[in-house]
Image 1: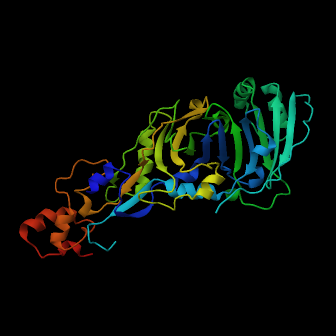
Image 2 (image 1 turned 90 degrees about the horizontal axis):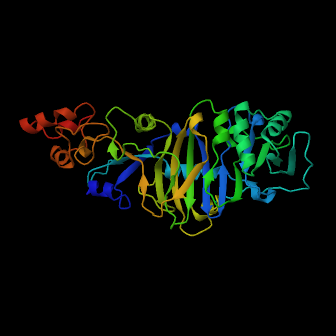
Image 3 (image 1 turned 90 degrees about the vertical axis):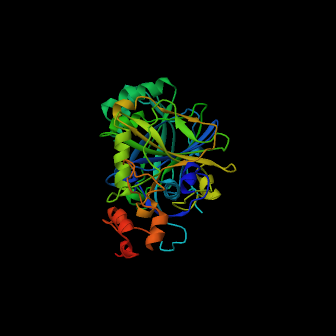
Length: 402
């Protein structure tokens, strides 16, 4: 029955949640929430800061229709809730009968104003406004060279490699949202800077990653939470190859789930960039639950105000030369569920679950053998004794001694 449960992930889980399988991996990844109800997209960007919060600055290409009323701060707790609920997980199973085992948006004081005339660099400030922590401007630029000069004069450290990307965005008719931490903002640590949230109106559903690649020291790691209507279903990336990892297996004895998953990611992305699905499930549900499902208030704060939103968690990995175009997203039109799950090693479960990366075991343990021996599982280092004990009739329960 346990094997059947694995092949039907929407049905009952009969184990114990142990912990996340990617605890340190997500600390080095940018996180983005994208709630899509075409043509509207609510984009929530985690403040990815390393170092002094006072040095934080943003430069985001945006559609020309964006106004100050479309920009606000979001509660950092949005990411914490979605992350805990959807992260790759490690679980433990036991034999039958074994008992051993309101978030919301931050109010914004955004205000618009008359456009500031273009300067010598051909850059026009269409609006200057502020939220509780950020001073922001919406810019219209005539050319990349002038925009680069303006950014440099304003103290924004933009590398020369950004110029071609900026030129492409200008040619496409896009504006730029630039901002930095307000000098009079309440003191805040870099790790707790509020995310910026934008409301966009665009027919195309995409995520610009090119500018980030020009300042990246190496591969970019992105965790993307895509929230859609249930009929749109799980989300994928059109213009990148899909990668897969081995899961739904027992982590080899002596290994950790986190270490195993990190190695699986390196293997999956060894041939280049791409994306993989770490979680896809209807909100309010999980099996097993790694964290509390997001309630309607959390999802509404992320931009999903419709009933029964569907959430897809993607991990995207790109090298700078691969991030030469926006990520084009699509809905698969189905609500089939998916998750990355690893089973904690237990001798009594060897007959029920394959061991990750391993060949079939010659003498796998089972619940029936554990019951005959009077224990739930074999102790570390003693699984290989099972055949000898069963054949020689040694004292019952010997394997249960710790």
